[in-house]
Length: 140
Image (cartoon, rainbow, N blue to C red; front, side, top):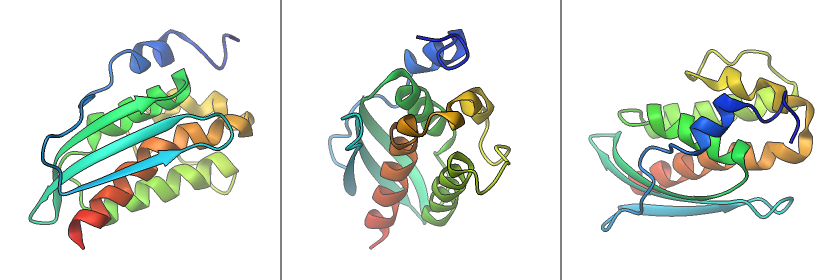
């Protein structure tokens, strides 16, 4: 592990993922996998009045994927499916170099060093992708 990519903040986030348990009665569940590294995130959601009311995550990913899922889970409750989809898209745009702003989601700056490691991007996106898709599916 290199210091710029894996640091104490990343490891702390990876070890403390909020909502790190499956929901017993979700309205929707989505599993996302990275073909590159095998990381996996399962997201369960319950929506109420168009907003994320509860969520559960099962995260089997590298420390970067776990840290990203931790940040997502810490701030996703109360957001709409559209807002979660926008966050997913903005994270993808940042990682691909199409945008430079990380201010759209609290704490994401800790993942900035990973931008230069494209093989890690899929794992970093998994939590955001899974929760956005699950929220959209629950609305349908």
